Amino acid sequence: MTAAAAFALGGCTSPASDPPPTHVTPAMTPLQTADADANESISSFGRLPHAVKLSATPTGLVGVGPDSDQVVEGEPLTLDQWYRVPVGYNAALAEAEALLPSWAGSGATPHTTEGVGIQGIGVQRDFGGAAIARREIQLVAYALSPTTSAVQVEVTDDYRPTKTAVEAFPTTGVLDVDVRPAVGPATAGKSFTVTDPKVIARVAGILDALPTVPITGVTACPAMGVPARGTGPVMYEVELTFHATANAPAVVSATVKQTAPSTLAWGGCDGDYDAVWVAVGKTGQPELDPTGKAVYAQVMQAVGYERSP
Image (cartoon, rainbow, N blue to C red):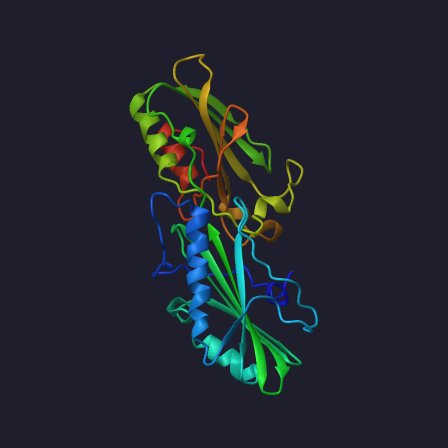
């Protein structure tokens, strides 16, 4: 981990009205798109006055590891670049900060740090449903001498993976609905079958409209631990299994979870956490992102089930 990465940003972000620049072509994967965007962000700092682009991490910097570039499918994308500038480190950071993109000054969450011969700033922004869901830029200036500094620019992009072809939900056939509380006080669940094609199409449309969950290094709240049944928050869960015909093997299934509003503050979770897990047979597919959408309530209403949080 680089020193810039060690200045971890908090989890609070603000939705952006101006999405990050994108370079999308049909031949590009989401990872390639994120890579192109991150490289564009990094290259903009080459406009630092009298900057010299360095090919590697400067030697002799305490606590600074090797370059942190990570361009791996299924992992958050991180790129960094070093520049040498002929000014003191405080002035170097100010010059770099002046080159931050417009969104960094309009609702992004800034974090600063400083020490002897080092000063840094980081900004992060949540871009909602965009292909690049979240971007973080960290700038750190290190004193090489009283009049020379090294500036590290590190960009992390959380991108949304492409949906697989088998992740499309059928609009006809048979839909098995299994409603149950995942954790919390024991509540009777209910299982039933839907054959009305209008209802099945409505449920399929709700799920098909969801984007994939972005590849991110942030841990979701449910991973913080699951209490014994009867304790902790009430989390509702419905499993939706689509079949071509009655008694036929499942085509695809989706599990939708939602924490009841009255128990949101449990376990460090700051707010409502919906989740949609998808599987074809026993093979999991990219998780779908229902952030900002009451997907559980929509599905319950569509299938005519009244008990919902």
